Image (cartoon, rainbow, N blue to C red; front, side, top):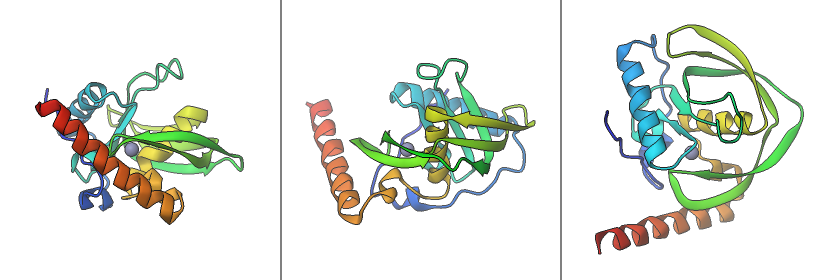
Length: 175
Ligand SMILES: [Zn+2]
């Protein structure tokens, strides 16, 4: 298994739009496995391929802690085919914007069509935390970060703070 490097702001590769996969084959399954491994070791709940510089519509998440039964999910070509009218503000954080968090408005429920790890098409409803996480990860595949949902001033402030956070963290590690 390989540990992948998670890109952080302001890396422009985070702004690329990912392309759909043709099929979930062994290569994609291997990528999903590496992404999960990377996500666990970096203490994240979700990770999109864009965040490791691979521009394929693949994401992984593990919400078992918050939503039992939603343990490791491996998803390709996710497509939101329905959104609830109801929205909700939740605190979000992101491995690509290290050390920061902010309140972001999201749809409470979504219906997702996607390919699972066995290349089978699935359609499933997700609510609350799972819905929020999926919207966050799907945004990544379109080159969008959660800070883009905030005001310009707040966004710039969080990006600057994230860069400082990463720099200081590195200095501590190398001492
Ligand atoms: Zn993120």
